Amino acid sequence: MTAFATDSHTAAEFRAAVESTAVFPNQAGRLKLVGEDARDLLNRLSTNLIDPDAAPGSVVATVLTSDRGRIVDLVYVAHCGDHQLLLTSPGQQQAVIEFLDKYTIMEELEVEDVSEQLTMLTVTGPEAVKVVQQVTGLDASELTTPAVRTVNVDGNDSAVSLIVPPADPATGRERMGFHLVALDAAGASSLTAALADAGAVQISADTAEVLRIARQQPLYGAEMSETYNPLEAGLIGAIDFHKGCYIGQEVIARLDTYEKVQKYLVALRFETQNDGDNVTDALDGARLVDGDGKAMGLVTSTTVVPAPGGESVIGLGYVRTVAAEIGNALDVVAENGEVPSGIKGHITARPQLFGGEKPMLGE
Image (cartoon, rainbow, N blue to C red):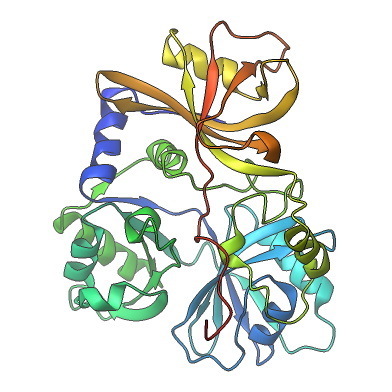
């Protein structure tokens, strides 16, 4: 998939996101889970520890996997007291509902898709903390750890849920941003106005996609699917290797213990003498090969971003473990088999959305 940030409007939106604060409608699915067994079931079905006895207010990122250890979806579990709000990848609501239903036998659980009822905005950028403080009235210290809180915006009686999602400690809050969920139309209107008054620049879905790739965040359908497992996708920080069994646990544990991960998600910078827009056309569905022409991986997402002196073509992809070293350069082979003249993909990072492996409790 390809996105561009080279036209003046999109470039201005992109700069707002990386230099100050931006806000955009988040298309994540929203599922409401009700029932005393909701958290216990999620704990038994997913990679991370979902403590059934946790106090309301917690937010946990976890991965639902198939019995083969492949990604069904990356979800966020927000403990809202009388229910759990489950954030899915865009368009994955039904797949998650079916997955939960498949493994719900005697448990007390009701699942409702509330994506249409709830408006969700994401606030991101280096000044996002200040903007969220101004809009919600919370202290900065309350915005550092994963949590869900109910707040009021500008004295409006309509409640808004603030979700602080987990983040990689190395990259911090700026990368993940904050999610604000309005529970009704009045709350959505007040929230949108308050964010604009606080200086947040609204950006388009196209710019949000450019930002996603620039921040090395995997997307379901591109970097996440049942083709990949969580270790390959850099989601090791959402896996608790010390908890009990879950669907796919044996496969994932074996891959980790015996170092059998075959490929890794990588961030790429493409080197070319050609026009950026033409290059991204050639990169859609492209393969990555070594100097001998041996297949090493594939390109999953690309974009053009503003850079000093012009623009830069970047992307995400998967590369075989043997070649997935930062600094390594691979040749690009277009989907039709042709080699675009002079295009190389340089590996700039091996992203881990939530950081590295979680330590054992007490370590």
